Image (cartoon, rainbow, N blue to C red; front, side, top):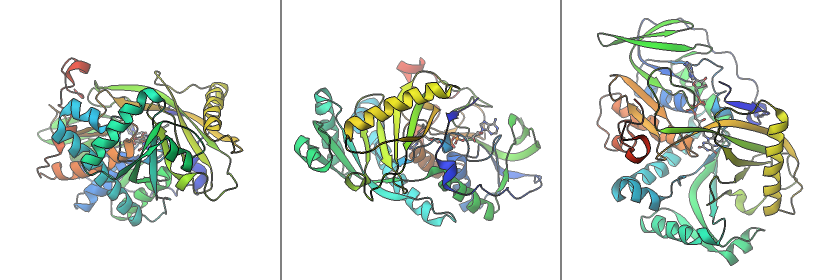
Length: 412
Ligand SMILES: Cc1cc2nc3c(=O)[nH]c(=O)nc-3n(C[C@H](O)[C@H](O)[C@H](O)COP(=O)(O)OP(=O)(O)OC[C@H]3O[C@@H](n4cnc5c(N)ncnc54)[C@H](O)[C@@H]3O)c2cc1C
């Protein structure tokens, strides 16, 4: 499956990663991680920090899956707002989930500081504006809910938005504790770090099956057989090699990256900007003064092959950006489309398979995928080393999304 098409910006922001060290397949690993993107690399670090022996496999070059298409907005707020999540799963779990996302932001920052490559991690506020008057009540309610549970946020009315930004919107929530990152540098930094900690990396290694022989897992791949106690699938939006995904929609989304602008600060504090409309328009700036804009999600899994089709959507994103910032001289430098997965209940899939023992999954579907990869890696590092984790039930695979999946588990 082609999970992105078009011209991507991040690969040109760093030198081509060096070839991975050639290693022999060991006779046994504690954990095999299938998928060398953001989720796999963060899990490798969390598990290596616990002293486990790990091999990570990827059928592509590592970090070139959807990690390379990620626009790198890191936010504790989610596509499902806190007040909506409270209605969906109850106050205790919903508030705890938001706290986990806020903690994950702190953990991402700390991880960025450990990396041998500077991943351009910069703390930024986010501005989440009401797209029109109809959404104002909802934005106000969300602000009050976040505030009442102690999440760092502020509220701007129309006048305050006008003082900070050149466009007029009826109201906005401004959150603190968010950040931008270069996800490609971040994951390549993680790969270098875990390799130096003894994790074995096998690129161009396609995993096709797992057989459980009396508690020892035999994992067959295009590079030969592996043996491990546990397997962790961090395979992103593609069809799972083992297990069946029930609770997700696989769509596609478009992104443009502008040419660099002649300005040290492009807009107020180079905030991350997004909106209440669905699908939403979102944008951020980069360290070399570009603007990244994304949106226009479509209910099709595969990105179009035609450059013309991608550019047509790119021009549409440019128009939407110009409508908000008419003074900025905007030229498109990169445009692409990528597969994008969203779970039906807006929560990531993290945990052990309901029936296949020692098969674990970390699928951080949703706009906040990186935050989910981070929080998932922490939860998994505990449950995979036999410790209880009281948060694991919120994101477990056995949860029943009754109205959406007919009551089945989200991964079968
Ligand atoms: C356009 C776009 C914008 C986004 N913007 C943001 C954002 O601003 N902020 C945010 O937090 N998130 C964002 N995301 C989400 C984010 O990109 C994902 O959450 C993240 O990339 C998921 O990482 P991953 O490691 O799970 O998947 P991937 O990076 O896709 O890694 C999975 C890997 O598994 C490998 N694999 C699959 N099957 C096999 C197999 N059988 N054998 C071996 N290897 C296999 C693949 O080759 C791949 O490299 C965005 C996503 C898209 C598409």
